[in-house]
Length: 453
Image (cartoon, rainbow, N blue to C red; front, side, top):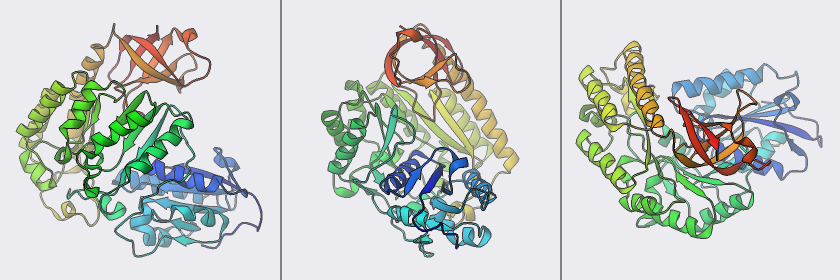
């Protein structure tokens, strides 16, 4: 790790950020640090960059492989435009030594506790801002400038760091440490800063968002935070992502049911419903409790959009367990659902378990589950046809310049389907993003089509 750029030269820096919105916030904080340095120019064109940062994800095998492939792709450009390669993010926190040994083209590492060191890593002052012995706590970064990488239609506000749940299949606590909440005052200041930057939708994120404030002694922590943000900011939409079944606060859904600016949306990754698999996962709840929970959510918030994720092929999952999961999905009629094949993660309890279904079996179960969900999602979207909704229109569709795209309030950014707009475009302001009323004219399993009215 020795590549250093000439002294006092301007560094043109590009970044590739992989993984979840929480990782994206870290990336935006690092870019905020870089933007403050007059000798650094941030570029969106990697062909122009002489320094490239890869912000990695280490959640599951597919994410780790994507991170490694991206690092290797940039490593091949060393000496041919790219002079310095820096790796940051979750993989650095857990696999730094392995990465250093296997990819010597990496010039510097920046760990999750050292985001403020990114400028020194870029300029070559430091090569290593990630201790070999990783710490089990990750810093809470507060009141630092951010560079918004995805425009102003939406932004994420990370309300806490880490996770203290005991899920046997998950390595996040090993990378991100134990759960720790940020102070309300700090979150309000950052939200107001995002609003002043023109952000239109605020998304609250964390590993376990519904547990917000518990470690600080707050009662009804997330509910009170949302109430404060509604009072202290003017966002048209405030959404929270990632509810944990064991930390639900029903006051949150009561607020959602009466407050139109608080998006009627809940992403609650259940992971499974079979009592046998939940026990092996060390997850709370039971099939009966989950049915009662969903019924109560929809009673409190009649227009609720509900999203979840499930894992197929977890150690110990039998055909009977999967059948129970399939029947539950058919009953629940989720608006949006994702399913993932179990990924064995190093140093987790599940990695030491036996009776793991074959990859082929897990893939088959996942495909069957998603085939069912596709029909359900199409049916749910068809119920929107002929109705009019508030929407945020974000810009020209990626696939064709003849369509605009956006989202309904029940479509979270980046993870759910889209709203495609093919009529009434002349009614919109010239500068997007913008809010509009849209009539839904057609439905597909993931996307809906509409006209501005």
